[in-house]
Length: 113
Image (tube, rainbow, N blue to C red):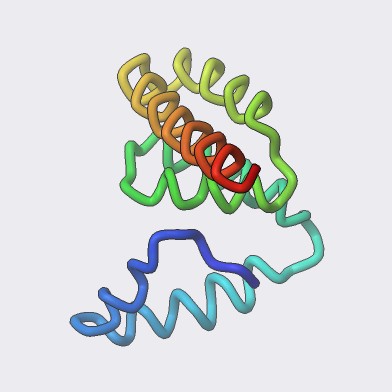
């Protein structure tokens, strides 16, 4: 499966090779590949958890979620709902991360035109 953007796994492998191996083989190769949930649904679940916990992997998983079929509008709706359950500051931070992604996509589209 495609991994979240950012390339952080390999830099972590230099200091925590077992963590990298378990992440690749168990989390991505086994859990993410199970058929009971779509990758789109797994992405939404993962993104909402990462937002609620204010984790650095949020942006990479948002990018992956968009590739897995989520829309910017759906992520925006999720962020608005999360504000009431996980707190306004984490929702605002997530909205800023999503804006960064949208801006980067817009820049990429305009440079391809």
